[in-house]
Image (cartoon, rainbow, N blue to C red; front, side, top):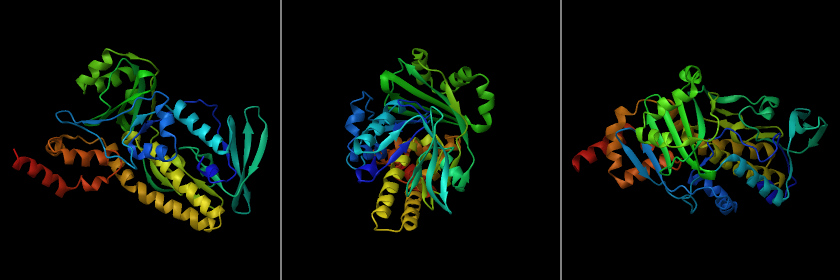
Length: 384
């Protein structure tokens, strides 16, 4: 969409037939909806009936913090958009901008001109083979990216998966905005979404995933019982979809570009879903990469330099989120920090600061360092 709007001829290829669903947190913090607003698409998403989310609740058991993160580029809106609605909206916008979008078509391999990617080999739903050539091939093809494999793009920063879990959609379960429940070795994420449904994810350490998968619903509900109010709401509702789960949640940065190719989204950078940053990071990467490609194709920068600059800037702008995600995905017992959270709960500015960390607007190190924790706790004690 972005490249077509810049006047370039674009071919987009996807093996799916849209509308199509996929495993995804599909939550949009203000840093994510800001892109949709800047691209002229936020009102279109709102018109799909997706409920507007105004508050974030962080529940640590004895302490419950509620508030709203800061606006980004003029929008504080938050949504949890189903992918079978969000993805076609983006595809429609790409087509409206002039891009050719081929569905039910799979990329089999890259075509190499010497050591530079010069095109792709394709196969459609009827088994017909084809080729397409271009000066740049972008792999926006997810965690198991075929483009990344063909280009032999290494993982340059790599941490193993830390969690695994299951989610489903529930009818008749009201929510107070988006709700995060953090317990020792447990996480529960709650999002209102399309069709008056509530998406609820339950996560455990990865080393417990196999055992919990043996009795998914029983272990899912046992975890919900750690948040009694939520468990009561769920017991009065109805599960409206099968459970879906995964423990394939690695944390990595791949090499994001090379001669004639580039990666974006989960193909370039993947992290645990506990922080709900995936779509926001994908949008950021798309904007940065589209600008870099436009500079290269427009003749204002050499291809290699433009793509390297994209890689560097993207890592710089996501590194704080990556480190925060690794910390959160450890699922440490929040008990040692309860005095800190209790102090934050009583201070509106501290609440705002914490929620900006959770929303990916501020770096975690500004809040979660020994000096700041001691300062906030001492200040709260002094004002009792």
